[in-house]
Image 1 (cartoon, rainbow, N blue to C red):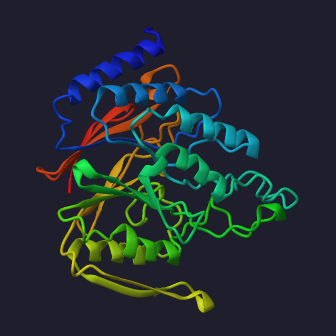
Image 2 (spheres, rainbow, N blue to C red):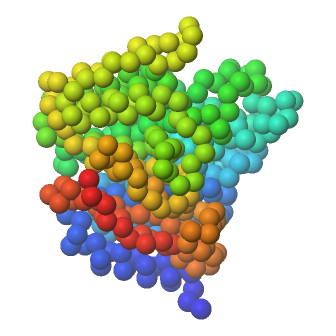
Image 3 (cartoon, rainbow, N blue to C red):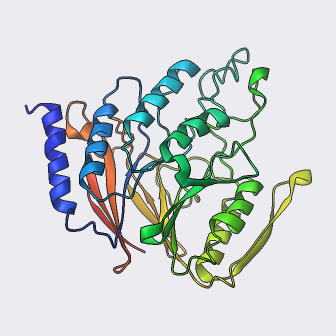
Length: 353
């Protein structure tokens, strides 16, 4: 049996050989890794080492961590695991964009015991510090919400804006209270504030002609036809309406929320004209698939952690390359195609947009 580090090194060499002529200054190049579910000292550190090596040998613009970075333990343990894997993914000069996953607030730990409910929650301000360390000054946040976990990063050379959404944009109580009303583990929502930010800031590209967008979230914006889906994202229809209006150079106007919480969301992209939406990357479901909605591909990537959640998913085994899985993504604008080179378990894919 070949040593596992040798297996990783060989796979890195193979990927570089396959992609050196494919990834160019004209393509958008990134790594998408998601659902690492890491525990301190765990085997996903090997995947992170491979990602660092790939970023040093390929012309990669970004690394995107799709969320659910760590296993759920006590707050101190989970924060330590999140910090270790997020730091391990970083390579100087390549931004690491991290997405909030439904496990990342750790609300599942102790949720069934009222006496500890809230004490092990990782609050948005704590998560934001981790995210900021990876993107530094590259990210643009919602200035009206200091703890908002949605943002965008511009890849100027590729005329592309990568928009990171927060599908678990729930309110949290004061950390000192020891109690919380909402649990990010199961409650998915786009807040009205996030929707208005998307409509009026993130998708505002009037001063950037010919630019396009790539959208990333942890949970799929829509659950329809998504294998492995669980709960819908509230206000997903409104968010999608905004995205489609952006693509078509149109407008969107709706009210979201309930009762006294109803808020108006409006967008008008008439002056921008039609724009390209490359697609929407997501994780969460631990399964590879592409679902088209209104002609826009929603693309999920297999979980990086060593776990086979469905009989239809690839087998996984610690000590082999199948212990991890992530995609090296090449967006070819001329051919309107997203190619994903699979490192580890799973298959390469080619997706049109």
